[in-house]
Length: 298
Image 1 (spheres, rainbow, N blue to C red):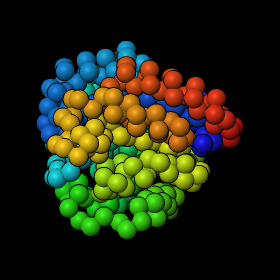
Image 2 (image 1 turned 90 degrees about the vertical axis):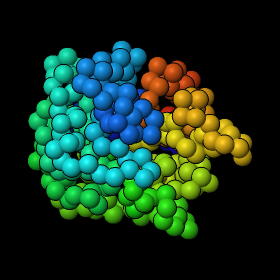
Image 3 (image 1 turned 135 degrees about the vertical axis):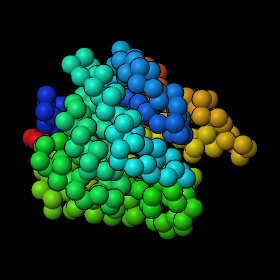
């Protein structure tokens, strides 16, 4: 059983306490091709209403992405990504009460998003794509989520998988932290995401899930995202054709429980209302099993 440390994350609008319980981050993809909900929130009005729905469902944070990072996806240019997310951020300004994270690998998008009301940056490449993104985080004193990905979305499931997934993930995350610290990002503003589904095999995703406490032991807040992913669909299929994305709710619930028992500070999900119920019960199990949070100054 993991021990979840407490952290204090400093946002421009508030201080967010991590570790007392696992927080729920709702996913809002404003893209035509994301694996789970591509096209659902492509127009601004639908996206804004979708964000408010996630807030009403109980999300603690909202993560907005304007570029798909599904397997096989190709990058979009800066202007297209900005055209997708900025109108949505403007629609939330002064109305959405929960903090907004923006999922981007581009420093220009990160800069514009923070100026438009986002408070957290989420880089799935852990600064391998654009080191200037760390400078943006430092200048705005914005928290920065660094995720492990082997390769890039275009080829991450085609290239050879690591022989030792834990060594690969831990080494990659440490390199990301080193890049962020070299750019002047405060250690207290860095969060880590092991990157479920990003360049890992079916078996490696489950090994990573079972050994999540080793990621927590690195000493940073941990963000996880297994929601509706293909390795969940394959397990549900029991050797047959993977279950469709829309039928992976209960499988996702099982992985969310494992994430919380493994010590995750934030879970990133699509089905907020349902996963909040899962999180509440899993949190009681976590506390009852002796995995209570430890205080830490931050």
